[in-house]
Image (cartoon, rainbow, N blue to C red):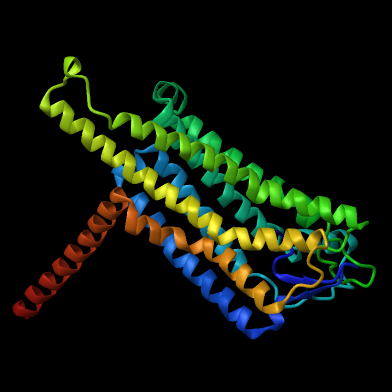
Length: 338
């Protein structure tokens, strides 16, 4: 997981992948796009009172924030390994283990992954266990869950980034070099694969399978003896459409997550357990770029799939257009007076 931007042999030597100008350009483009489109999602949600009032949108807002943060740290990835021989031991260790190891970037990626898990569980409870959902999911508890997601994001990459990236005696950073044996490399590889990919994917599959089964039960014809009024029926159908729109959106986000990350996770796990002996530059660039692309692709899914987001976007753009027209009218009137 965390060694995806680097080439290394088994003895631990690392060479930054940014030596290839093509990779550098790709990462810059992905980072800039992630900042722009996730920033737009944040503006749309904060501007729309209707979206702010829905608990699920709090998690979507957090998803955009962490993806934006990941995009920023992707841009900040150092293209070279500096020598800091004159720095104190403490500051050198801090720099190597926290910054040069890309720990903050991988923390943001983990935040994004487990926030997606939180959204999935929130949708699962709302659809499959609505009574429990109403009693449990308050806005305060949702904020606590968001805080837990951030804590998990800080915790999981410690093993794969901080512990394995010490400072060398010559004042250089030894990225992901602290493997004591092949067994340790394999264990860390499995740890990264399990917590970074397998566990979230299993939770998503189980929850969305249950949600689809529940929806199939709800669309069966009603018993004539329990018929409801036409207005109540229309209201129920409208709420069901809104709920389905949101679930389809988040299901698509989950599918895209799997598509983007499966190549990266499996490829580097096979490398850690020595099934693959050497990382091929072209294949490495493809799987890494596809994984990083996940930071900026979700806003396009919201725009195409999520009805509430589409409506909020139209309102935001309409207000801006009306404001511009008002400014033009005021300017024309002032020119006429002159």
